[in-house]
Length: 279
Ligand SMILES: NC(=O)c1ccc[n+]([C@@H]2O[C@H](COP(=O)([O-])OP(=O)(O)OC[C@H]3O[C@@H](n4cnc5c(N)ncnc54)[C@H](OP(=O)(O)O)[C@@H]3O)[C@@H](O)[C@H]2O)c1
Image (cartoon, rainbow, N blue to C red; front, side):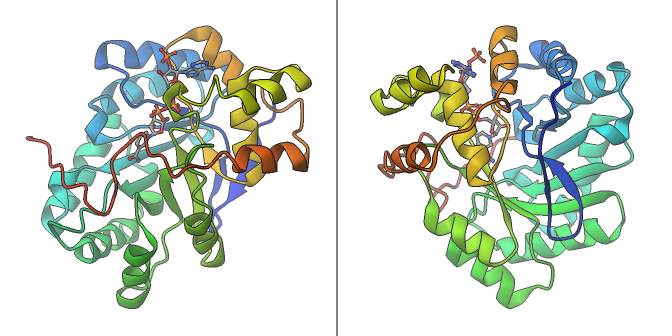
């Protein structure tokens, strides 16, 4: 079976560098899709309370026959639960939904800087961490200024920052800031939900190395050292996205893809995003 490389986080916890994303997988499809990803060999699943599929992901992990300790499961605190007590309750609900007495990683999904105080939320995450029911805590969609506040006002450095990264949004400043402070970068929407796949530069490199544009893009992330979890409900693509460890991109190829950066987001801008779903 393919060996997926791992990254050791700043608290010693080890995470597979390639996982399976579950955003926009409906509750109806999520158990089957996750089971198939586990069958293909993925051992890292990224879910969130916001995706409404934690229960189905947990069902798939339980039904897979794979030892729980061999699967890295991440979930995220939804935007309506930033206040301390709500955050503690939301974590309990996530464990319930996943049917597990622990989770590998728990993240603040969005900083929501215009509507609340994410420092209070991060302190609640630290309490959750101290309860021993999560192996690592982190944040998602935090910008440099948000991270700086966490460093100034709290004691635990997040293990990861999960941010939008792909060839059209290379995020090198934020990634470097993370590296300099021991925070691993997780790159969400690694293929920009498909938007980069017909880019002429990526297509030409794919033809040269005999791989698909998706594989070349995912490999670019891996060689840059980021953690990724492409999403697909299509079995052939789930397999394709896993088959990225038998070739290498040259430094020139990596550079050419990085130069495609045009600061183009597919998702919201974390500095102004303020969506709180009705619960
Ligand atoms: N923290 C956050 O705020 C945040 C935000 C967004 C995403 N995420 C996480 O990151 C994960 C990945 O991001 P994402 O789901 O937004 O986007 P993505 O993985 O970049 O792209 C998924 C889309 O690309 C298609 N696709 C997948 N593999 C393909 C391939 N080999 N060839 C052609 N098309 C392919 C999928 O279609 P089919 O499914 O139809 O095959 C789907 O439409 C999410 O699932 C979630 O876990 C986190």
